[in-house]
Length: 98
Image 1 (cartoon, rainbow, N blue to C red):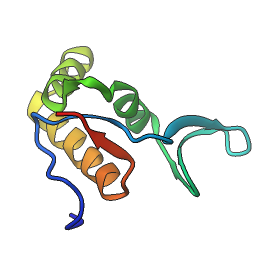
Image 2: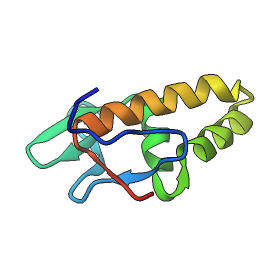
Image 3: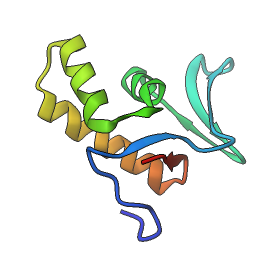
Image 4: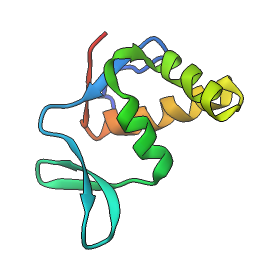
């Protein structure tokens, strides 16, 4: 984890940083996360996580919602969500709300 990145936990409430947005790349035909002077290609799972980062729900709440929706183990989903969000935080693509 980047030493400058804030600590992320299941209680963290995050949203995309200012200037960061989800965009469909028409050339590659896939979704990308656009930030000033950089882009990050996303798969379907990453897109679902990014769309869920509404700045209102904690990461644990998001993981619980996914677990119910996809009938999957909540602990496994929570770990995957936190790992992806930590990567976004390391790249300074997120704001921590609470």
